[in-house]
Image (cartoon, rainbow, N blue to C red; front, side):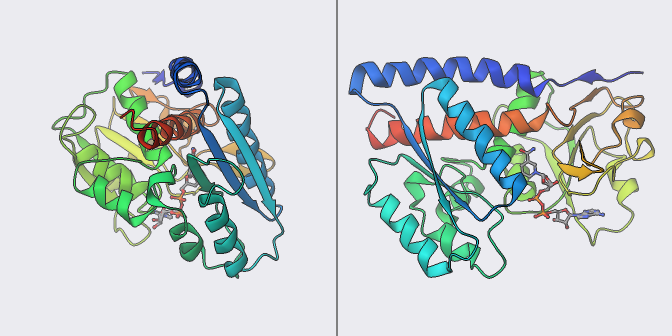
Length: 291
Ligand code: NAD
C-alpha cells in the first residue's frame, strides 16, 4: 500500500480564498480590514521564518499584519507592557495579538501570554479560550490543532467512534487537539488517547490508532511498525536535521503502511497559518458585532 498524500498546501490555498472574500466584505461594509499584530522577540531563525510566512499569508488575503520586533534581552515586564499597549490600540486597532513562541529563557512566557486579552487571543492560548474549548464551545482554537481537524474534515476522514492516538501533550498542540476531536460534532466524537514522554510501550498504543497524530518534536519517532495498516497519519512535527526539515514520522517507511499521510513540509504547517488568518477574521467580526 502507498498512502494517499494529505496536501496541506492545497487545502490552505482553498481556505485562503474564502478568507480573502470575507476580508473584502469587511472592507466594503465596515471600511477596514482585520488587523493582526505579531510580537517577535530575539533572533531565533525558526521563529523569524514562521513570522515571515504568517505575514506573507496575511498579505495574500488582505489582512493588515504588523510585526513588532523586540530584542532578546527584553524583560518580562517590558513584554507585558508592550502587549498591554498593543491591546490598548495605541498602534491602531489590533483585532488579533500573537506573541511568537518560544520566548527567551529568562522571560515568564505565561505572564506575557496572559497579557493578551482573550478576545484578541488568535493563538487560543488564554485560559478563557482553553476553558471554552474544554467545555465544547470553542471560540479561538489553537491554530495547529484546528488545522489538523480541518485536514481530517477536508479528506473526509471519519472521526466519530474512531480511535485517535496523539503523541504529545503540549498545551498548544496535543491537549487542544484531544479536546477538539472528543467534542461533539463534525470532526469530533472520537475516542482519543494522549501519549507523552512517560507513556510506556508507545508502539502498542499507536498500533491501535485509526488516526495517529505525531506532535512530539522527535525526528522520525513514528516508524512503520508503530502504524496500523490503513491508518491516517498526521505529522505535526517540525525538526531540522542536517539542514533539512523532517517531521516526527519516518515518512518513507510509514507511507508503505498507512492509508493517508501528511508530509513535512507541506502538511500541517500551511494549515496552521491558514487557521491563524481565520481566527484573526473571527476576532475582527466578533469585535464588530458581526458574529
Ligand atoms: P512540546 O515540546 O511542547 O511537546 C512535545 C510533547 O511530546 C511533550 O508532551 C512530550 O511529552 C512528548 N514527547 C516527547 N518525546 C516523546 C517520546 N519519545 N514519546 C512520546 N512522547 C514524547 O512541543 P509542541 O510545541 O507541542 O510541538 C511538537 C512538535 O510540533 C514540534 O516538532 C514543533 O516544532 C511542531 N509544531 C508544528 C507546528 C506546525 O504548524 N506544523 C505548530 C506547532 C508545533
